[in-house]
Image (cartoon, rainbow, N blue to C red; front, top):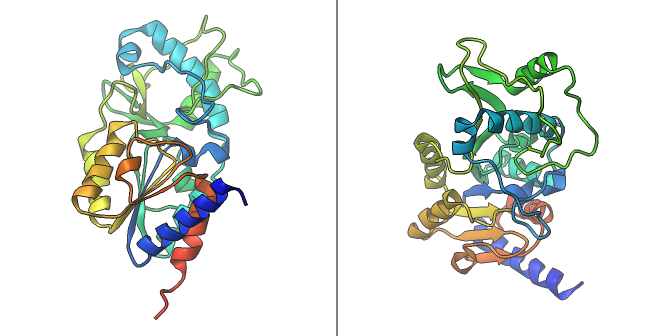
Length: 282
């Protein structure tokens, strides 16, 4: 066992001791989905990215054309990802009554597919698209079929360089027909929070309510650079709740954590699920 593995094992043991007998809220980021083949935004080795902002998407037809071509190619690969053992461990924590639910910054839907029932998707979901004019909501699968009918040349290449948000950089967008709302002809937008866009107030309130019903917070796979995550950590600290952070590398809240576990989320979440499901010794 290496020094790093020994330190991680000791940190897991401390986390189990602190969390046992408490009801958990789990906050997850992109690091939870890396073992499902979805890359991280800011993890070690992650490429530099210049994601499209909501202002660019709304203001420029060319930007929307580029987004929909890249988003479609990436979504085909993105949607084929499967939950990993970390997702399943979180679902098991909820089934066993240890966890109140999961708050996620991810848009991949893998927590729901793993069996989690109470899932707060802070940044939205790739499963839905809505009209910015009339509010009509569409299933992304139905939209994908329509896009391919309207753009017969649009094929799904192999080995697409997938981004964490299910986007890729297309080689060409020439001739692409931008999808429109079939109800009113308005502009369609994926039901995700773009960079430069605020999380809906009611969605953050839902996350706060889940945390309010919990006795501890476990953060898994998030560097906590995004303000929504750090705000929830602060809510937990104000209530003097234990905060356990599981993440490879530094996070923005390491100094505020009760326990920091510098290790992969899949293995650690699995270990926590097994240990915390065991009855407390008398």
